[in-house]
Structures are given as structure tokens and as C-alpha cells.
Amino acid sequence: MPNVADVMVRSELPAPVYRGKVRDTYDLGDRLLIVATDRISALDVVLPTPIPGKGRVLTMLSAWWFERIGAVVPNHYIGVVTESNRAELPFEVGPEYWGRSMVVRKAKRLDAECIARGYLSGSAWKEYRETGMVCGIRLPEGLRESDRLPEPIFTPSTKAAEGHDRNISYAELAALVGEEAANAMRIRTLAVYGYAHAVALERGIVIADTKFEFGWWNEEVILIDEVLTPDSSRFWLASEYRPGGPQPSLDKQPVRDWLAANWREGDPVPELPPEVVAATTDRYFQAYRMLTGEELSL
Image (cartoon, rainbow, N blue to C red; front, side, top):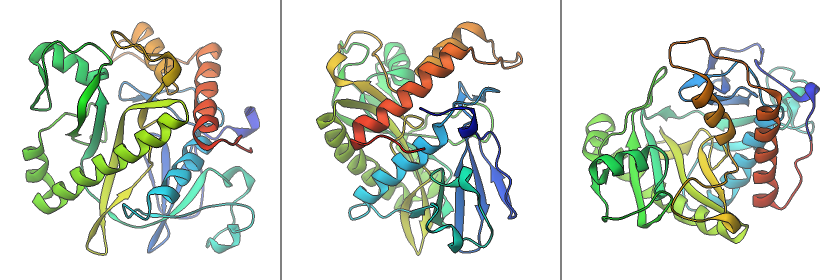
């Protein structure tokens, strides 16, 4: 299990950098170096308290999935930075970067998030209760919270640099990125989700929903950013799945729940208590262990 020495809140490397909520992305010319820090965001804010080891889970689990889906859906993944290949970078990176940094192809990001939902939860459950629909898609009457949907649905959203993302319809997505890109994003989102759901279920995890991002590279729409991690997905324990209410999860739900109960939008974001940090770290590492069958080496 990680300790204080494994925590990275901010990376510092000698290259142009864009800092997102969790990742620091460095421009290497025709490639990018993505460093997954241990920052955590919830309810559209970045919290001041890091989650030890989280960045390594995000990087190594994304790499595990990218390697398995690459033959079906093209993606930007080249490789994880390790002790053995670190010399291939144009500058020195210390051991604190090994296993949490990934070299990828530089794609032109499409400014939308692609969400696949196989179960009725989160914002989709809220919208369904109010309208009977999710992102303009009419669902059957009488569904309960956490029910499995008749088939997975594609629900895109805007990608906000700050503040709240906004759910949009497929028509709005097509207007935003173009019909060709929107069609590829929808097909590939549902294809990857269908495959990943089956793989995870065999390992005891229900992927209730997940978020993907795409970009243009070599005149093709490819999968970018992270993929199928506890940050981007809602992971439930299959052994405890009981529709009709919230589900035990292996993601950042402890942070969401604590923040919702202890913070109001507009107020300073508080530090997380140690027990919430520990519970979240445990869930991230358990998800990695269950999916890959391996202990994460730190």
C-alpha cells in the first residue's frame, strides 16, 4: 500500500505543460507525456488533499486496458515510462515518475466527453426521475435506481475546463464536432464499453458507466486520455449488486459522498479527513487488483 513518499500533487518537468484537474500533460513535439498526479476532483472541483498512489493506478490500469482494446479501437497509447525506458525521453525523469507517466501520440482533442451507461445511476437517475429520459433518450417506465438498462446508451456531454459539464443530445454532439466524428465516437464508445463490461464482470466488477475522450490523429478518430479507471468509471462490486438504490463502489464515491455532505458550492474546498483518503485509496487498489489479477508494484 502506498505511503507519503508515493504522493505527487504537482509535477515539474522541462517542457511546455497543460495542467488538468488530475493530469499534467507535457508537449514532446509529435508525442505527449501524460503524468497522472494524485490530485482528485469531485463535484467539478479539485480537492486540496491528494490520494496516495492514485496516479499510478490510473496510469497502469489505463495501460492495461489500452493494450487489450488497441486491436479493435485505435488509441493514443505508446507506453508507460519505467526505469528501463526512461532514457527514451528528452529529459531525465526520476523514479517518482515511473509507473505514473505515459507517452502517447499527440491527437487533436475533440471537445466533448462520451459516456456509455449500462445502468441507471448518478445524473442519469436524477434526469430519468424528472423526465423519463436521459440525454433525450426515452427509457422504459418503472426503472429503479441502479437498474441495468435494456441496452447500453450513449450520452455525450460538453467538456468544461471549469464548472459543470452539460449533458447534450447526439444531434448537439454532431453540431459540435461534425457528423463523421460524432458517429465514430458513438460507435467506439459503445464497442469499448460492451467489451470492457464483459471482461470486468468476469472479474467481479460491474462497470455501471464510463467516460471516454477522443481526438483526431492521422485523419482518424482515436481514443485518448485515460480509459476505464476508477476516476472515469463507476465500478460496482458484482457480488453486492442489488438494484433499487446506490451500490457499493470501487471508485471515488467516498469523496463524492463526503464532499456533498460537508461542502457547499462557492465555499473554500475543505481538506479530506484521513479515513476518506484511506477508503478511497483502498478502493482504487482493489479495483486494479480485481481487474488485472495483479498487485500494483510501487
